[in-house]
Length: 280
Image (cartoon, rainbow, N blue to C red; front, side, top):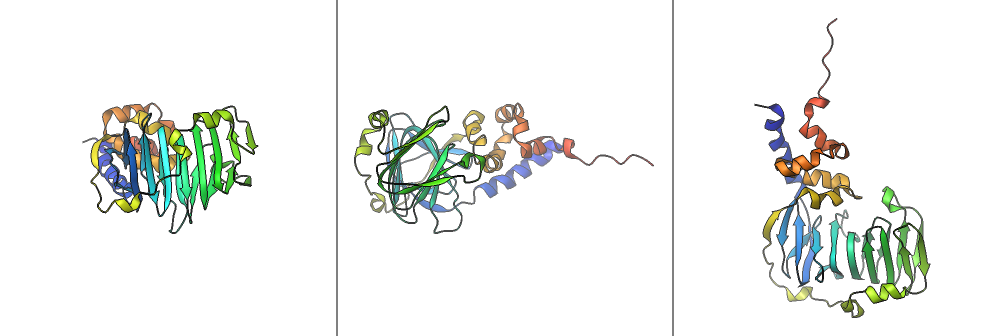
């Protein structure tokens, strides 16, 4: 039997078990339209009341919305868009959200949350914020309270920081230029989802039971690739390693294997085997 093929299922099973060790942190409290949840490498159909865990990804279709409530903090996502509940370490700690795309409104209470994008992060301990993410273009608008803007985060380390006050809007364009204004631009206000003009509802207390997640299908390489290319690429490389069992996923990954060193070792261990000692 081929050593590589015999060893691969066991190694991927161990990685898959490790990736599923997560903490229940809150609940999806509002669903309108089409939305789904990625846990591990599996997509699930979701309904209001479903519990969310560290590591979950919420993906919302165009003209749809989903709201997640965690320890009194509410986050509403209007699609098309997605967000990742990144593990935040020991609790209590600010909720950590990676915002991939879409419109977001958050109403934060202590210990608050950290909103992560490719351009910058904002920490909000107590306040209301509206965020628009469209690829590298980002807007942060402080509707109430205050926040701390942290630039330079795409490199993996915090850069310059500054306080943001109520009414301020920080904008970074797709070309890389950034500005801070005392009020949001007209285009931002005109494009904002209509329901963001109202306070976010608090709905968590309505749900006394936990609906079951209904599995749909496994993630494809095309769906996984943006996360594999993002700030948390090492975590997602470990998380999606189990999908290498699937021939179509594996073929797509092989075309870009230089990006995924741990996968290269799994799929081609012979490349990393000790070199034979030449005879003396």
